[in-house]
Length: 164
Image (cartoon, rainbow, N blue to C red; front, side, top):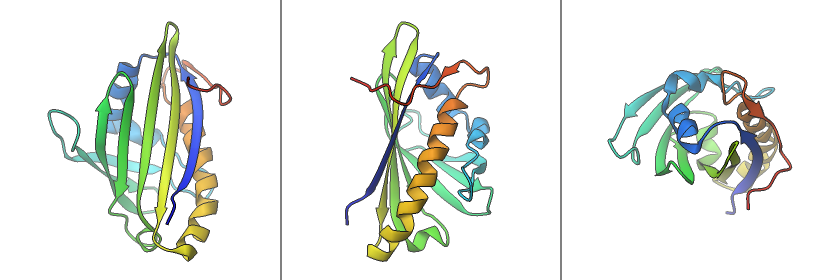
């Protein structure tokens, strides 16, 4: 079954390395607040942390009580970071096998262009029909989180900007 894909773009007044440091700071993961009925992250902590980062696993507890694990499957602080969301609990475990989230970076003199995308892998056709409206909320949540990326408010939102 084909995944459901969403993409958002933005610009941040930080280097790709700064962004990657923020991504590894699990204390900041609660800044992901979700959107509408889509829950945010209440708490995140490393279940396993590797020296090379790839293979590290982060256990999250969401604001609705649900949980999942995010495994870092690609880590290039200059270009790209990829997370695999898995080990969902109910009800999401009934609808999705996993999600893949990619952060693509394009460094500029004044900061970094970010393309952030997610692929949701449904288990069956009915699951696809359930995940499709959830993907709309997830896109809004990713856009909101991209705007909140920096606690010092150094973010300039530019959703129409494309990474070349």
